[in-house]
Length: 124
Image (cartoon, rainbow, N blue to C red; front, side, top):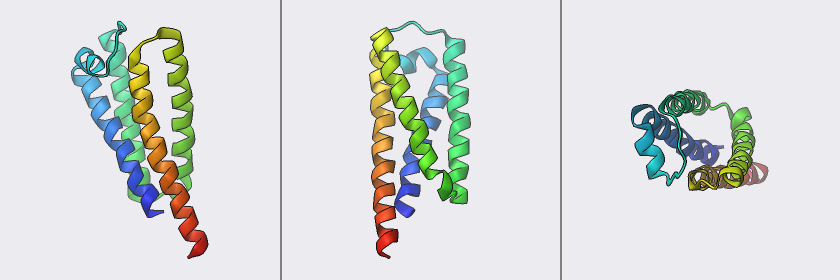
């Protein structure tokens, strides 16, 4: 499961960077992500706190090599992708498409890695 484990570093990276940016400069960061919506700083900072917290949990999954939870990270991110699609549909804010691209890329990395790791295990 080496490839899958490595793919999770991307997840930790965007959770940490995104979370820290939302805590430090929330309005600037959502503008960088192409938002056309109006979001309160306190809400964005709270989301940032949640993202950094999730990054810490995923970092522990990586550090402890908790392979049992690797598929769970995929399921959770697929749920997030569905939610982002719904949020975009209801708001037309490009922010949600940008986030969908970021999260979706991670899903692609991890699912491909997981498939290749499982295939290697079955042949090895």
